[in-house]
Length: 432
Picture 1: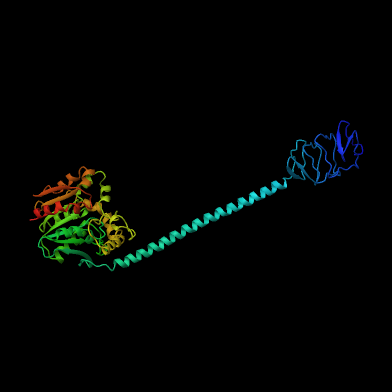
Picture 2: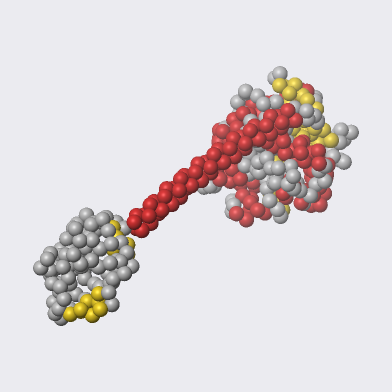
C-alpha cells in the first residue's frame, strides 16, 4: 500500500491541517480522534486485513467499497451496531453476516417471554381442569351424602294406616271416619305422597264423607314391589284394601288424572260395589285418538314434576303437585321434598310408567257401566289446547244413566282446589 494515494481533488483534515495532493503511506495512522469527513471519498482503495480502524473510529454516512472488509472490529453505520460482518457499498449485510448483538438480545428475550407465556398458559389450563374435577367430585360426594340422608330420613316418616296386601305394606289415610258415605281417592301417576298432595280435597269433603286416600305401591310411604304395575294388578291391590281389609261394600270412586283410568277398569270389574264415579280431569281410553297423546300423557303426570330442590328455597313454588295455597307446615313440606326425591324414580313407578300404553289398551273401548252415575270435572287448560278433551270425557260415560261433564277454570293439578266453592255443593247434590 506504499503507492496508495489520495487524489488531488480530495481534501483531508489531518491533525487540524488542510492537506491537498498529499500521500498517506502505509505508515500513516489515523488515530482515534481523527475523522474522515463526509466530503472525503476513498476511491478504489482497499483497507487490508492488516490495516485497522479501531473501535473508537467512526465512519459516518460514508461508503465502504465493495471489497472493503472489516474483521473483528465494531463499526457504527446508521445507528446500528454490527460485528464481524461483511457489507456492500449500500450498507447491506451479505453472505452469512452475523446478526447484531442488539438483535440477538432482543430475539433471546422474545423467545424467553414466549416460553414463559406458554408455560403459564398450560399451567392455567391444568389448574382449571383440576378445579373442574374437584368440583365434580365434591358434587358427587355431596349428592351421595344427601341421598343417604334422605333415604334414612324417609324411613323415619310415619302417617296414615299400613295395610298388608300380598305381604307388602300399602299406606292409606282416612278422614271423616264417623261418616257413612265413602269416597275412595285414586291419585295420578307418580304422586310423591298422595296423602299430602290430596289433603286439601280430603279436608274439603271429610265433613260429610269418609274420605280414603290410597297410596298404591311405589307411592308415598307404601312399599316398592317387584310385581308388574299392570292395571289388573294395581286395581286388584287397591280393591283388596277396600273390600277385604276395610270390609267396605259400597263406595264412590274419585279419580284424578291416571287414577280415572284405573277407576274405569275398577268400575267395570266391580260394578256391583261402585255407587258412582267422580272424575278430576282424568285420562280416558279415547285419548289415544289424539295425534299427540303421548306428549299429553307425559305432561299429565307427576313424574316430570320438579325434582329435589334446596330446602332453603320456597318449596311452594317448586312442586306443582303440592297445592301452594294450602297451609302445609314446615315438617310436611320437608317430608314432601324428600319423598319426591325418593319416590320419583323408584322401580315400581318406573314400571308403571313403562306400562302406560299397555294399561290404556286394556281399557280400549271400555265405558262406565249403565248403573254407575258419572260426573267429570275437567280443566280449562286442557279444553283450550285439546279440542276433543271435553268430547272424549263425555263419551266415556255416555252409556251411564247419569253422565255430566263440567269445565272449570285452572290447570290439571290445581283446578279442583281452586274451584271448591263450585265443586263441593255440586257433589253434595249429586251424591245420593
